[in-house]
Length: 250
Image (tube, rainbow, N blue to C red; front, side):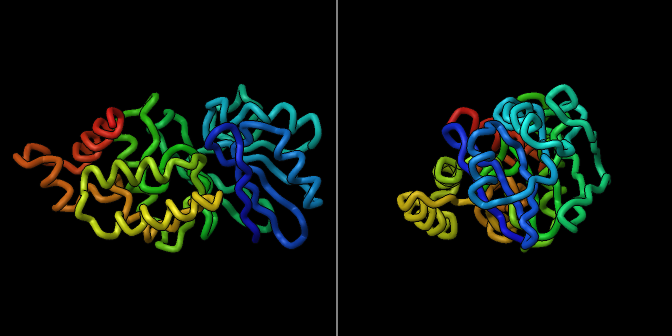
């Protein structure tokens, strides 16, 4: 399989996954022109669209794409009015490109947010970012924490195909919380060099994210001591909530 990130807007990625038969899926097409151009340039046949949630920067390109391509659109209930004609939920399976994608419900950013997983790929929309976490526009901190725990259980080789290039900003926040963490510091230097060359920081491997993404480290005693020196937070999701609050004001 071949994974391609198509830049959109200021910092979005539209994901394209294609096989050797030149068949592909597109994930979260917030815009259409770049997608149509990419399909033409690579002579790919579009087989399906995947939507993770209803926000316009993830779905606005759907109508134009459907005018060019007669393909199914898979998404959660909240995308039914945005073009999704195949509504999927937790434990549903989507078979396309000779692959089977499992649907994971990942509420938090929006209430109906989902992810599509077929090893090693997880198309996680605005739930998990490299070194970070999506904003809570509709869901609660506890819901997002539980979504992170679901992602955390996936194999360490899982590639997190997030929808935004937020990695450097997220690493700056992580460094502000744990300035002595050498792994975070080293990765920040690596990503700075990568971005200086105009290269994407995504997809991100889950195994590494477990080390540099503070939202996946709420069990970490060192992190808990920094955030909660008086040991007032007795549940990990409350650590997560405090971390998200601090990120909101960073």
